[in-house]
Image (cartoon, rainbow, N blue to C red; front, side, top):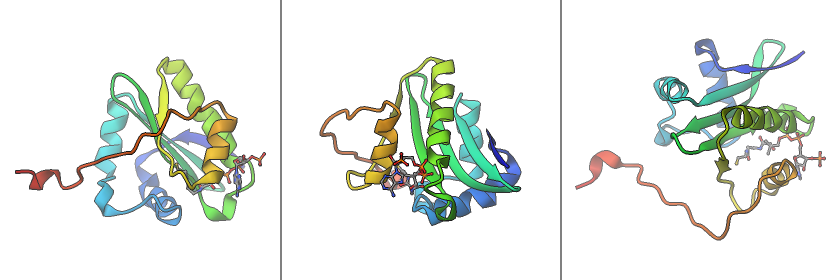
Length: 141
Ligand SMILES: CC(C)(COP(=O)(O)OP(=O)(O)OC[C@H]1O[C@@H](n2cnc3c(N)ncnc32)[C@H](O)[C@@H]1OP(=O)(O)O)[C@@H](O)C(=O)NCCC(=O)NCCS
């Protein structure tokens, strides 16, 4: 039986496993349990899909006071192409609608399956923007 619910502390290891399998893991991203908790305290949400007691998909929405950012959206490879991604985006959009803020995401230009999914549910391409980040913030002069 499939259940979409909020992340809880005990899910962390399974969530990390899903992220590793779907190319969203890595210590360089700094996605610790504390960061998840902080993002939720700031009005975000980490939704997980559970099947038979196991977390098999995640959708993490962070809130910066202006917009909701959707990321870490992934389905365990063994469970893909069964409509779970579609159901999880719908649930994520419900959160954004209830909260009343625009929702934005980044997707690699070659990730056609994710682009198909997002555009199917109403996301539109914003333009030719590139994405920049400073990861090593402590090393800044
Ligand atoms: C993208 C992803 C979340 C899709 O999840 P999913 O549960 O397999 O998707 P669904 O079965 O709900 O499919 C919904 C729609 O997504 C698109 N889609 C999913 N898999 C696809 C594929 N292999 N090829 C093309 N389109 C695909 C289709 O539009 C599909 O609708 P359709 O079945 O009517 O064609 C999943 O492939 C995944 O986790 N990928 C790795 C992580 C990732 O890239 N996440 C996005 C980061 S921005």
